[in-house]
Length: 422
Image (cartoon, rainbow, N blue to C red; front, side, top):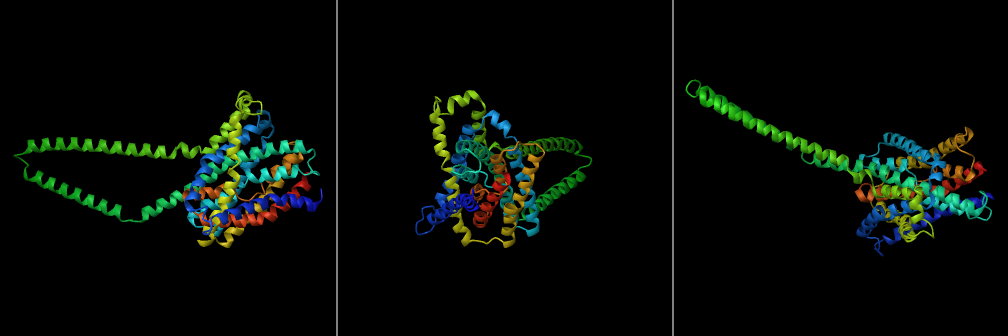
């Protein structure tokens, strides 16, 4: 395949993302006001609870079987490795550039998780459908490529909504809690001092009363002391129950199943169960399956996820341009991590795995594995910032800068990857 033609094929998916982003920005302008603030919030909720779980479920159920899951074991390992290395590089970037506290979750998420969902689904089929595809037969390439891209999408959905989402949530919640505490920092100390003063006054009064009745009212004093001890024991038991109740509430908060199992993770697990278990697969998956209408409906819902998330990035961009700016050093650092450092690492890992016989030589499989290291940040991070209302404008600027740069860098990397695996 000619280099120029290969360059154009790799460029098209990035241009699609940029066009959808521009469309979202136009719909959010005051002249049209189609994507108003309330509409954006409602669409974010639909993406989080409906579109993304449906996409993960339908993709896994349609393409993944137990045999293919065992054969593709190295892909989950590579994806987890990209997250681990990206998080480490992101944390280093946070320390070097001194990112504000409320934006640390956003920077870590952008460095850790790439767009493993819609970009592979756009890039791989586009290359396979070319008449002079470098990966052989068009139908076989498309079938295998969709399986690889679907597994990448499902794993990415799990990581985005369980890892990056919770990083953004953690820093946003801590920031809000700190603000609430700092509103009145002397309240607790003043109330404690007042309570201590009252207790001291009561103690002095009791001691004076006991000294004045040393001989005549000894029996009454003993009775009073017994009653006083009983009251203190009762109060102590009440306090212990309150502490126990607080500990139980705290434990329930930390083990919130809604946070540990986001909707996309549940959808991915359901899709994986349907794809791996033959009985469920024959019942739901395939044109001749009795309940194929269920799968078809889920596919229709899931198809709305990718364009909706991409347009939301463009809608949020207008707010970012009006609000605070992101430091150039932060933008430059994220671009270097996602578009330079990670692809170099990906080439070393994949070629090393092939060299040592960890994975078999498959040009398309190697290309997809390398592609996962060269992708810009996941657009679902923008949805997370919208849900927690933290760093929305800054996230839009980061997405615009990284995807604008990726329109060139990803195209060059794809050209290099194809040349390398053939």
